[in-house]
Image (cartoon, rainbow, N blue to C red):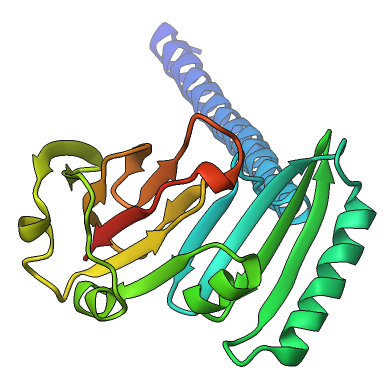
Length: 233
C-alpha cells in the first residue's frame, strides 16, 4: 500500500470518528436536555399542586372588588380561635344571614391554617352585602351615586399616578367627573379595586400600586378607622 493511500485511509477513519462523536454528543445533549425539561416540568407541576392545596395567604385583611361582587380575605391568629372554631362559626353566621337578608348572599370559600394563622376567604354579591354582613360602612358606585347617597367628599385628597400618591387635590377637582367610580369605606384593611386609582383620601392611606390602597390608624380597632375614599376609573 502506497503512502498516499495510507494517508487517505487514516483521514477517512478520522472523519468517521468525528462524525460518530458528533452524533454521540448530539444524542447526549438531547438526553440531558430532555431530563432538564422533565425536571423543570415536574417542578412547575409540583408548585401548582402545592399552590392549589395551600393557596396564597394574604398578610393583611384584604377586600377585592370584582365583576361578580366582593371577595374578602381575613387572617387572624390561632391564639384567638382555631381553624375548626372559625369554620364552624363562619358557617353558622353565613347561613343565618343568607336566610334573612334581602341584599344578596354570602359564600364561605375557604378556611385554612398555616403556622399560627387562620385564613378565611368569603365572597359577597355586592359591597352592600358586605357592609350589611360585616357591620362596617361601605359604598361602591359612581361619584354621582355617592353624592345622591349623602356622601359629601369632605376629605383631603391627593392624586394618584402610576401607583403613587401625588399632589393635593380639592374636592371640586376630585368630583368634577362624577362618572368616575368610588369605593367609600370605614375599616382598616387593604383594598383592591377593579380599575386604576386616580384620587384617594390622604389620611391614614398608603397606595401600594395602581389598584391597591391600605388603610391604617394609630389604634388596631376598626372603631378608630376614618372614612376612606378611593376614586378610580
